[in-house]
Length: 111
Image 1 (tube, one colour):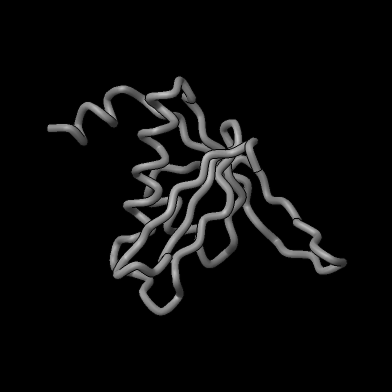
Image 2: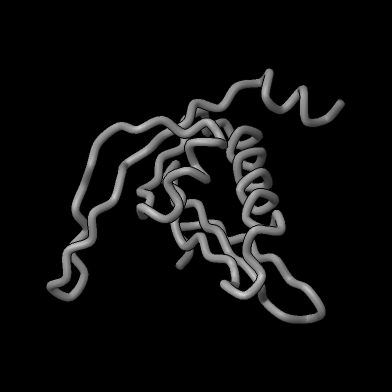
């Protein structure tokens, strides 16, 4: 897996979340289901976005499940297309989304 960068959230020596970046595509974004909705996913995504921007990646892409769609929408991701992911013969409806990263976003975060 040398083709991607992986970031992890650790709490009390336990892995509680992961997110990865392959070129400009976000993948492997998971937060322990038992502790969702407390900001861990937001922190992971913020970290990845700033990393991407600092490494001259100006547009991020991802596919969202229906359950995560609103999370990404609130974070500024825009719908590009509806897609079907087929995994082991099972089709999953997802939404392809993208976000343009800008200096303004990261200048505000540092203030």
